[in-house]
Length: 217
Image (tube, helix red, strand yellow):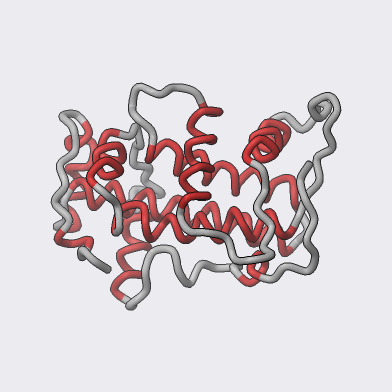
């Protein structure tokens, strides 16, 4: 990876650095690097869990996790003053769309449709918005999950100064599992095995294949 995560020294705002200081001391890497590794690990889990659910045809839950990942990306690339889950989701979807041009003939879902779908997955007892029909699509999962994996690599390792500043200021708190910094450790291990954070994600075969091209309307 360029730059190496162990040499990443971008500063975090006052208060944020203290939050990540214990992990920084434990692993010998900067607070910014700890925050990135944790966030990358969370994104990998969203993508992996969504892939596992797609393989089991549990599409509602899979869509919810995938779009949670898109909202997390939005939190990372939004100004700290921007509030609201919907705006962060839209910012995340815009970032994912701008990562690279789609391959010719590949399905690209409309952001408005994904925002509606996220609302429905959070409140599945509600009726879909008037005049619309929500449909699940393997092509939609492939688009969102492929770009989430790509974002996991590019958000910070190939980020410009503006993106780095926004991520450094983003409100992201560490979570420990059974007293361990699971996400930081798992991504560090993944890097040391020669992989990048957005590659070799479990269950990726479930969303990389596209048996049909349908739309979410």
